[in-house]
Image 1 (cartoon, one colour):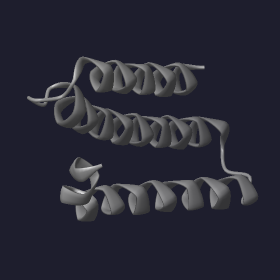
Image 2 (spheres, helix red, strand yellow):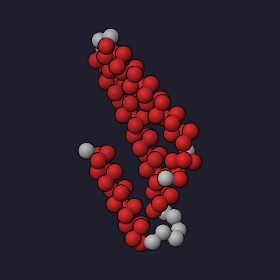
Image 3 (cartoon, one colour):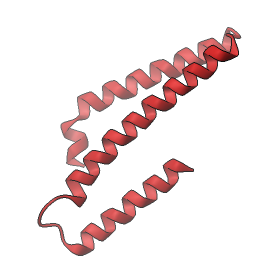
Image 4 (cartoon, one colour):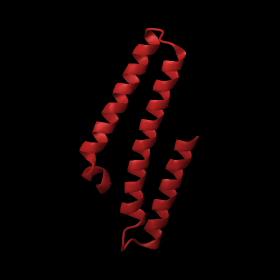
Length: 91
């Protein structure tokens, strides 16, 4: 996946921020923080993961499905890969 290599530093930074948010959520649960704050933290984590998924998905689509010179067979395989990933993600 060349697109993830090109954006590696940026993607890793996003993952580290998500990890930080998850750690903060764990601390909040451990400290029995008010439910509203917990819900807000969960929503923030979900938004961050959605943003990461969107960025990687966009790069994959542009790199693999939008690339010139890709055979119809390879394009079909790539479409199936994206569809499978989306189905898993949206469950």
